[in-house]
Image (cartoon, rainbow, N blue to C red):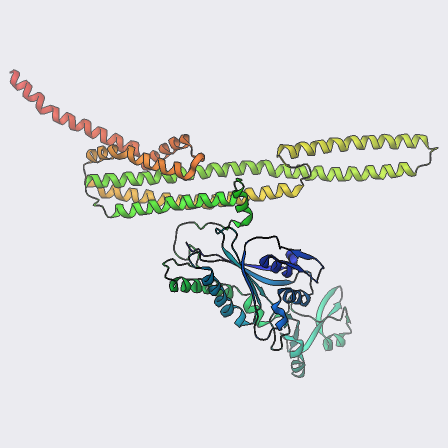
Length: 563
C-alpha cells in the first residue's frame, strides 16, 4: 500500500559531499567535478527507471545537461562548508503505474520548485520492486532574470545614529549615510576593544584596531533563500506532496491515501517505523539481521498487538456489563491485556538492564583504551628519540652507547606490554586489531540510542498498563451488585482460554525471544496489581458461609426426626 516518506537533506561541502556526486548517483552516470577534479562513476549502479532535468525560464539552456548545471553550482560556491543543493527522497505510491508516477513527480516539481525559480534534477529508482522511490536534487541559490546566480547572504553593517543601531547592506548604506548613519569600527580603549564611530573615536584620539566595520555575524539572507530554508516552507512542501499523491491516487481510482502529519498530530497511539535504508536492507537480503529492520519488526508486532487489543476493548464496551458472563468475559479480557503489558514492560526492563550493564563496561574500557594508545604513542616517540641519539653518538663513547641501548631495550619491552594489553582489550570486545577509539564510541552511542528507545517504549507501555488497570477497576465497580461467587466461578471457567490467547500473542510477537519463565513472573506481578488473592479469598469465604447456612436447616430437621 502507499506510504508517506519525504526526507529532506542538504548536500554540503562541510559534510564531505558534492552536488556533482549526488547528481551522478541519482542518474547512475559518470560525471567530473571541476571544483576538485574528482570523477564520480555510478554507471554500474542498477535500478534507474526514469530521469529528467527541469529548469526555470531564466536558466541557461545548456544547464539541461546535468554535469554543466551542477558544475556551475560548484563554481558559484566558494567556501569549504558551502551548502550546494537540497535533496528530497520521496516514496512513490506503488498503486500507480510508472507513467502515473512520472506525471505525479513532474506536476509536483513544477508547481513547488521550478515555478519558484529552482533547477531540479530528478530520477526514479526501482531496484527490486520493494523500494520504489524518487530522488529530487534542487539548487539552493536563486537566479535573477538574466540567469545569473543571486547572493545567498549579503554583508550587513551595523550602523548607529543617535544611540540607535541598525543594519544596512552596502547598497543601502549610501542612502543611510546621507541620513546621518555611521559605521562602527573597532578601537582600542585601554586594554579593551570597543566599537565606535569614526567621529567619536577621533574626538578622544583612539587608535583603530583594523579596517573591518562592525557587521552581523552571518549577514543578511536573501529573502528567497530565507523562505526556501525555513521550517514553514518544509512543512508546506511535505503537505503538498501528500496532496499531490492523494489527488493522483483518487484519479486512478484507488482508495488508499497518505498523510504528511506525524502519528502524534493525527492522534494515533501506534509507533511509527523508522527509515531502514539500503544498507540495512542489503544486510537482510544476505541473511544478516539489521538493527534497524529488527526494530521495525518489533514496532510492527507491538502495533499489531495494540490494534488487536483496542478492537477487543471496543467489542467489550458493547456488551452488557450487568450480566455475569459478560462481566466475567470483560474482566478476563482486561486481565489478558494487563498480562501482555506487564510482559512487554518486563522484556523492556531486561533490555534496559543489559544496555546499562554494557555501558558500565564499555565506558571505562574506552578510557583505558585511550590511555593505552596515548602511552604507546609517547613510548614510541621516546624510543625513536633515544635511537636517533644513539645513532648520532660517536663510537668511542662506549658507556653512553650501553646506557642508551639499555634504555631502548626497556622502552621496547614497555611497548610490547602496552601493545599486548591493547590487543587483549580489542580481543575481549571482538574488535579488529586496527580498531580505534572511534569503534568504542560508535558502540557506546548505539547502546545509548537503544537505551533511549527502550525508555520511550517503557513510558508508552506504562501508560497503556495504567489505562488497562483503570478500566479493570471500573468494570469491577460496575459488577459490584452481581453475585461475587458466581462471578468468580465464571471467571475461573474462562481464564485458561484467555491466558492461552494472551500467551500465544506474545509468543508470536517475540518469536524466539519469548520467555516462559518471564510469563510465570508476569502472572505473579499481574495478581499483585489486580489483587487477585484477596478476591479469591473473599469468594472462598462466601462459599464456605453459604455451605454452612445450607447445612444448618438440614441438621435441625435430622435432630427433630430423631426425637
